[in-house]
Length: 149
Image (cartoon, rainbow, N blue to C red):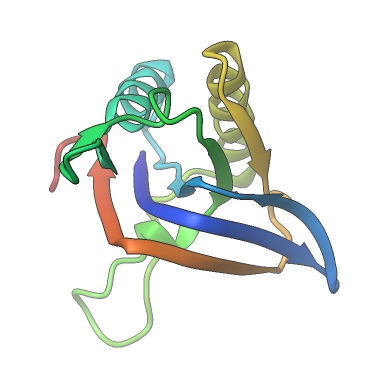
């Protein structure tokens, strides 16, 4: 799995002009599922994201997690995180999971966040979405469950 995690003061997702989800202070997580991802990848990603200490404490140091600040998470499916542009100019998405598998893992990720007591919003899997955010900091973290980066 791959994720782009952004600390936000607010974020929202629109589909066909209608807001389907929005959050205030928290994290926007663009989540991509790879062809060989499984529950181990999901749990790794969940632990990393919920444990990231990227919110400021009273001393202004990034020392607090999403749990510590009681923030929300907005999760948006993003298969294009597996776009490979090493050859040519048109991305290849051959290593992203098939949509049925990716949707199942995406939904499990959202459910696991809720199981952990986090308030979660989500996009619409497979839809053409407009994502709007105010990146706080800016703080943007890349995570890959295979530890590619």
